[in-house]
Length: 322
Image (cartoon, rainbow, N blue to C red; front, side):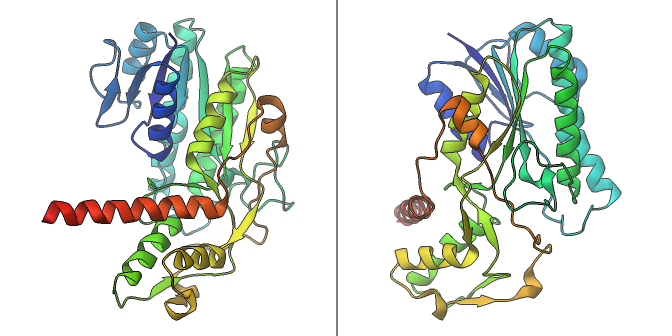
């Protein structure tokens, strides 16, 4: 029975990955800053990934077959090209330096563990081409992207020295577990409330903005497949299909029987950051060819799943009140 250490287990990706690995009969040691979900005695308390000594102790004691580094710091105020100094420091502390603690612990323990690092399409910044793959230059323009790029270079450094470490470059992926501040969940929740009598108007910044949106559980499957390969590498994870915010809004409101144009206002002043001149769109051919991965849920199906989950949650809340 393989053992997996999941760092950052409470987020969307960590939750779906934990569920997937449990179905595959893994022993789970999952942790974040405040909680654990563990089948093993070696993990009895949340792991402080900023403490190199604690990280080294756990890796040496647990000797996991697979390590999934999903922890990330991404502040909502990242609306400027690079962010302020404190923002960059915090981004590097979690996204880069803590990763190095884990990789160094693997080396110190002479561990045969395989590590997956969750990177982001934000490492491409303003890409030169409208379809990005693993050869696209890294050119981040925000603190989050800068720290993720640095982490990828750290991964490559260790990989060149014989450590099995793969990076997954995630494009946008959604699910009912997305926090409400993300546009996908915000639109779905607003459409449902309006369908139930709310007089609010949904305000969005740019209806024409294009996004490569996928379904989060599909991406958890991609992550697992990547660590089953004989060799580690970098992999783009995305659908390769662009949809506009207008598509998102139209689909969500159609699912509740409403014409979105009667309930949605476009207001550019609400945008937190300027849209890229070239949309981020994934070429995941390498991932598909080497692992057989394919998205299983379409854009429309994903929005329907999110809407159904929102309806179920609303019904449960009403039942609880009564």
